[in-house]
Image 1: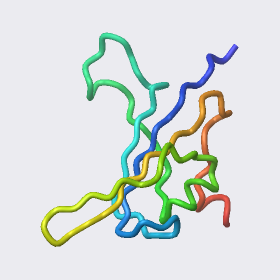
Image 2 (image 1 turned 120 degrees about the vertical axis):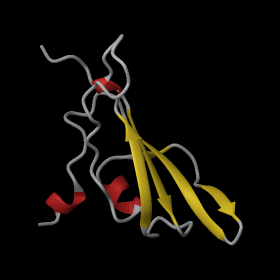
Image 3 (image 1 turned 180 degrees about the vertical axis):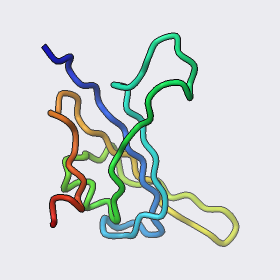
Image 4 (image 1 turned 60 degrees about the vertical axis):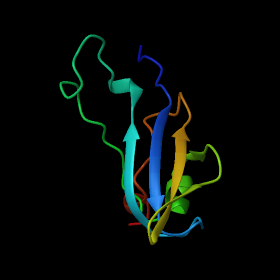
Length: 101
C-alpha cells in the first residue's frame, strides 16, 4: 500500500500581477521527501516542474493560496505567488511542457 501524499508548496515570482505574467523565479517544498532526524541537504531533492506562467501551473492542478503579494526594492518590483498541490493528488502534476507536446 502506498502512503498518502502530502500537500506540496510552489512559489512563483513574476514581474507582473497577472496570471499570464512571465515567471522569473520559483521555489518549492515537498514534505513527502522529509526524512526525520536527517540534516537538511542530506535528503532527496525536490523535483518540481518549471512553468513559464502562473496560469500554466494552475493548468497542472496547482491551487492559489491567496492573491499575489507585491514586493519592491528601490526601482524594481515583482509579485510572489503561493500555490499548493492538494494532498492526495496521485503522483502530482504533469509538467505543462510534456502535456502540450
